[in-house]
Length: 178
Image (cartoon, rainbow, N blue to C red; front, side):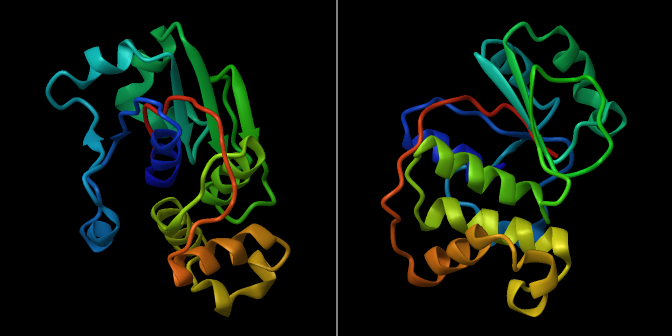
């Protein structure tokens, strides 16, 4: 969610991110000034209802989105789901799904690249951590899972070098993720 939100913000979109569970303490190093809100806190539901689109990341299953389900069902804007799991319910208008991807973060990276969004270290770092989290290994230690995804190596290179890629992407709104 962080990588997608940062990519969208770099393109001028107003983005608010929500999580269903508290942000894990071990990933605090990824945060800048963009800590996702916990769904249900303060008035975030009212804010989210004014969005043009909602992007649900890393699930397409109603049973996994729990407390946010009523909001998603009643939301009148565009609903997008980005996922790499086989389980899929009818919860979005557009699905960016690839069951062969090692992580939803890989699909976000591909989306950003295909849209031409600017991809820098601040976008790439949370995406690379997302791939590592999903695969359970450091990328270099599990080539069978990620070797066919050239973008993963590119993510790691961006993080290592702290450089910007000459890639540009267009807008959208991210309202929530798992």
